[in-house]
Image 1 (cartoon, helix red, strand yellow):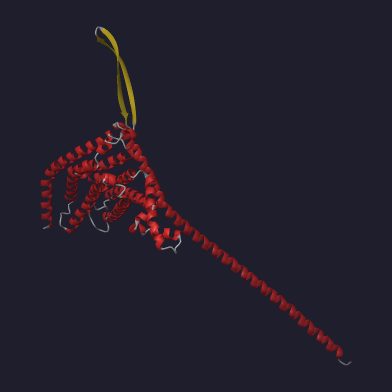
Image 2 (cartoon, one colour; image 1 turned 60 degrees about the horizontal axis):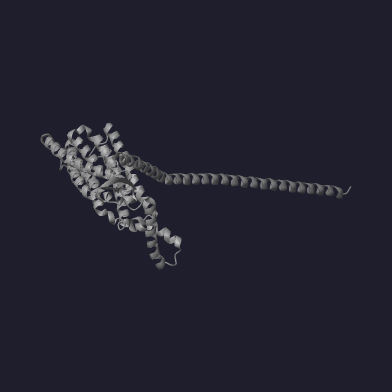
Amino acid sequence: MASINMLEYGEAYTTLHQPAVIIGGCLVLVALILSIHLIFQHLRSYTNPEEQKWIVAVIFMVPVYACESIISLWNYRFSIACDILRNCYEAFALYAFGRYLVACLGGEERVMEVLEGESRKQLSKPLVEEEDKPLLEQTAHKRSFISFFLQPSALGKDLYKTVKFGLVQYMILKTACAFLALLLELFGVYGDGEFKWYYGYPYIAAVLNFSQMWALYCLVQFYNVTHQRLQPIKPLAKFISFKAIVFATWWQGVGIAILCALGVLPKDKKFRNGLQDFLICIEMAIAAVAHVFVFSAEPYRLLPVSEHGKVSRKETRAILKLEEGGKEKPAFIEKTDTHVESPGTSVSESVQDIVIGGGEHVIKDVVLTINQAIEPMEKGVTKIQDKLHLSSTGSDSKEKDSKAEVEHVQENITESESHMVSSKEEVISETVSGTDEQKDTRPN
């Protein structure tokens, strides 16, 4: 019966594969045209590099997803490589979206100032109610780890450090797990979509699920604190459009794997991966349309260029001769040309700034995050070493004390023995003298 079902599923996959590739290819073409056109608009109107470099990185997520999905749908042998590419760029896109929000707020220093201001507002309320507690104790209580869940605005600049750590840790783990999955697949122990303890898929899925949820929760907490200051960019629509892509691709894949494990869908890997890739092709076309409205380049095109570029004027004067009543009179004509030079308006300069400038930020944040993760471990190791050292020095001191006590006891014993010997000698001498006296007192 199972073999008959597998044959039916195989025939269904063969029948539906070609129409799915054609439909998916058309949708991918739509997604590519819209996304590339939008990216090109941002590169031509590159008037705010600190924001637009991250917008381009987020928009580029659609072409990457669409291309790898149609390639994987067309040929199953490229599915593993395409999944690695998609997972790596998904992690980078989440990081880029967080950096975009920071850029919209004015940069890292400005964000820390804003968060510290929000923290002071929160700390000023309990100071009136809890006057008996010292200020340092209240501040430490408010900036505890629990306040990140209950009252994130009280953390101040520590909230930004936590959010950055949450985003970068997902980027690192997602990339590392993608290559680990490739390594396990080469050894035949990955088991894509198989929830069995001797396969690596369920463990990697659990780790990535927790890491992704933590990164998205950090973004939500950051949005809750700064949403009023982000109102000019309409952040809610951007949040929904971006998170829809991340959640749709991840949970969709996990959901298909669960349905296959339960027997609702066939367990054939080609069918499972093909269904996932076809759905992503549909979703990327929808996401490309949404990005045209959500991440439009119009606000940057309409920015006052005088604030972001150089304005130069060129005056041209000419002398003409006019004839009036048979007489020639000179006439002066002045022409002023205004030339505006905006930074990075050429596509080549824009791409160079995105690649080099964005790459420097990524490397810096990755190194900082790794150091933040290693620092507590180093502190823990040093504490353990200090305890071991103290215990060893304590035991040595105890041994020395015990040796000193033994030597002291031995000295006391020798002193007592010498005293006893001397006393015995005195007794003997006394007895000897006594006997001599008795000898003398005897009658002759």
